Amino acid sequence: MTKSFTKWATTVAVAALSFGMAASAGAQTIRLAHVDPDDWTASKKGAAAHIFKNIVEGETDLTVELFPAGALGNEDELVAQAQEGLTQVVLVSGAMSKVCPAASVLDIPYTFSSATVAWDVLDGEFGDNLAAHCLEQTGLRTLAYGETGFRNFTNNTREIKSPADMEGLKFRVQPIPLYVEMVKGLGGEPTPIAWTELPNALSTGVVDGQENPVGVIYNNSLHKLQKFMTLDGHVYAADFILISDEFFAGLTPAEQQVVQKAARVAGTMGRAIQQWGTAEGVTKVQAEGMQVYSPTADEIAAFAEKAQPAVVEYLRGELGDDAVWIDNLQAAVAAAN
View 1 (spheres, rainbow, N blue to C red):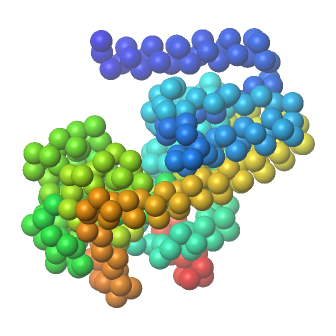
View 2: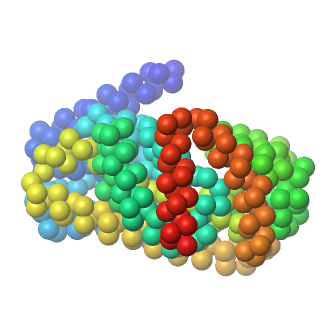
C-alpha cells in the first residue's frame, strides 16, 4: 500500500465520518482530535480534551466528540483536516510551525527560564499577536496554549554539565533543521532519526543520547536505555488548541464565549498535568537508577551562549520578513523575566 493511497484513504474516511456526524448532529457537533493518549491523569492533551468537552457540553447545546491517540491521523494531518473543516478542534504542538512559520521562534533554545515565564509570554500580548498572525496564515484560530514541556538531554556515556561534555557524543534529534543546528552549536553530533526508530538506535549504539520532555522519556521507557539525564530544559514546547475559524464564526456569540473559556481552562489543565508528570517522572527515573543533574543558572547561560546564535541565524534566514517575531519574542521574554 503506497503512502499516498494511505493518506487518501484517511482523508476519505474522515470525510465520511464527518458527513455522517453532520447528518445526525447538524451544526451541534464539534470533533476534537489529538495524538496523545486519552487518559486524562497522565496525558496533557487527553486532560485538556476532556475538560474542553465537559465545559462546552455543560454550558451549551453543542456536543463534543473526542478522537484521541491519533485516531484521525498524525498532527500534520489533523491541522490539514481543521483547515478543510473536517475536524473542528485540534490540539497540536510541533505541526503548527509548518503552517505558520513564525511559531517556530518558540523553539529557540534556552529562551524560557521557567514554565511560568513561558505562560506569561504566551498568555500575554505576544501570544495574542502570534495567534492573530497565525490565524491570517492558516485560517485556524488559536483558542489557547497548552504545554508539551521542557526538553532535556539524556545519554549513555557521561554526565553533562557543560557544552564541553557534549563534544563527541551523537544525539538523536527530530528531523527538523532547528534541532540539528542546536546540537551542532552545543558541540554534539546531531543525528536525525524517526521517533519509531529511536529505541533501537539507543539500544544498538547508533546514537549515544537523545532529547525529550521528562514525561516522554519515562512513559516510553527511554530511561531504561540511558544512564544520565540533564535537566537543561533547552526547548519549551507549547501546545496549540486550534479551531477552524469558519466553524467558530458560525457559532452564536454565547457559544463562542463558552468555547473560548473552555479552551483556556483546558490549556491550563494540560499544563498542570504536564508539570505533574515532569515532577513525578524525575523521581521515578531516579528511583530506577538514572542519574539526573540539574544545571545551575551559570551553566544554563553557558549552554545558551553556544546554542542560540546558530539557531537564531538559521531562523532569520528561513523566516525572512517574519524574522521580526524573533525580536518580538525576545522583548516579551525580557519583560516577563
